[in-house]
Image (cartoon, rainbow, N blue to C red; front, side):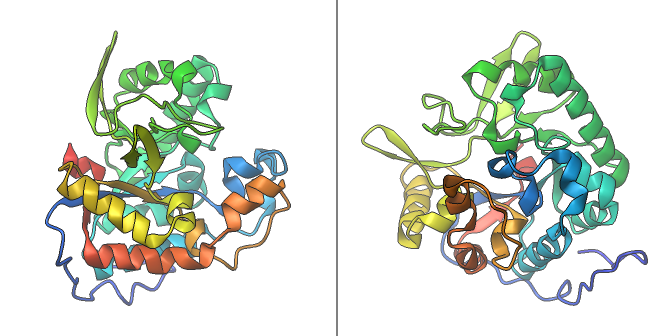
Length: 299
């Protein structure tokens, strides 16, 4: 909870609502929000250049505040992986995330895929984003998530850069097969990764193991596309049979079915726009039934 800063233009009318605790599942899971706008996603980089971001109608503020109010309703604190570009252009939004008691973590500066960068380019991007986020909130930033989970086999060197720059945990290695990302044989649950320069905690997005295959159920497009009964069944199995927390994620643009349409390729449009109208209610239902907290609380 926090008092609305004098400079904030958002109406936090719901911030004092009494939280409604989850009642069924005693194990606590992790909720994460990747704070980026609809035109920043990797799926549309072939038609939307970084240099043109300022030309698009931004909707990230309204959508993020809507998520903050929903989380406050249920008394949930989450991890917000924020782009440095967002902190640079919308510092009050990042301050409000922090002042509402949520964790502010790093999602790179401008959402470039790590495996398309050199170690030097990634280091400079990371340093810029970390500085902007810490300067905005006045608090250390110790968590990282790569844009589009782009720490893969060929970019594991990024972990060395994260350790070097003082990050304590990462949540980028998705243990699945995918055309853009994934390390299929990586560990499914949180673990320490030892590198030459030190160690870092890894929080993999959650998967449902069926006949030796990892099915992604961690949120995002998977929350929108999969039957909701399957999502709940997977969470129940991971919590009750495997005795592990689920790491769930979503984006502010995923609760916004009215967002402007971008003319990307057919696959990208299908992934981005399908079932946007269902995300908010699915997220509300999960918050009502399960307990969640930030990744930093698991540290």
